[in-house]
Amino acid sequence: MVNVMLAGGIAMVVALLGTPLLIRLLVGRGYGQPIHDDLALHHVKRGKPTMGGAVIIGAVLVGYVGSHATLLALDAADLARVTTGRITVSALLVLFLLVGLGLIGFLDDYTKIREERNLGLTSRQKLAGQALVTVAFAALALWTTDGAGRSPASTAVSFVRDTRLDLGFAGPVLGAVLFLLWANLLITGASNGVNITDGLDGLATGASVMVFGAYTMISLWQHNEGCAVSPGPTCYPVADALDLAVVSAAVAGACFGFLWWNASPAQIIMGDTGSLSLGAALAGLAILTRTELLLGILGGLFVLITVSVIIQVTSFRLTGKRVFRIAPIHHHFELVGWAEITIVIRFWIVAGICVLAGLGLFYGEWVGGQ
Image (cartoon, rainbow, N blue to C red; front, side, top):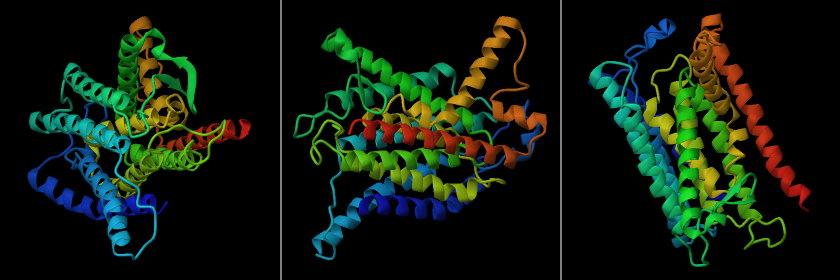
């Protein structure tokens, strides 16, 4: 528990103090955000520093490594007798997703700035980059094993734990291929979902704090009720649950610190650098904690906003008519006349309700199995 709190605290402080330094650097280089012409209300944001996700990623890495290093140093000096834990494959895989998708987002943001337009990488380029990172993650998660012979991921589709629907039914080779495709779908969908949500000051950042906070609680619970610690019918066979909690707390803390500067009126935008990496990390945590489908409830706000885009595109292609004035739906409410800060707060409330519902389902399943 101490390393979880340390990771979150260190990451929050690094993001809180590091973001203004990044703002100065970006302003000095003229790295500002292009604005889509359809969003006249956002023209005031034109030129605002972007790529703020870089400080989130950096803070997460410092928070994770710093928590382990601090406890290791204290334990070695006999100043603390706590479980220092160890750096695990599961945690490194989530960090790999965070950095990998963050790099793709950075290239997308940089292309927008260089071309001075609101179009970065092409859809094919972005999807190809996402596929490359996600397939590498999925393969390592499935085929890497620890000393107990456990792999971080499972071919079984999971809700609050693995279900009876196992993609391995098709055999070891085809089952692995199906898992790679499933993981790619989850990670690409989650990263693009957060990316679409990142359209108003603080909206995606605040919602991300809640969902990563939920995954910190889930991972800690899985550690305390793990099969190695508390064997029984309701135990969780999740590998490295405690270290996944450390990673999740670090991301939540980094987003919390960044939100100080990203809240309305934002002084910096996270950009695709932040949104793609955060969504990918969420999907990675869902896969490794065996809560893949539960992510759709915990991250219900991201799902709702993504579905609004799907509805808009489908309706226009089939009927030539639009359901919303503009999609995603939070921009629709702007055109209706809602103030930006009102939309953000109300959508945060929706995000909080989704998180509470997801945690309730997770805990309820455990209680029901007792």
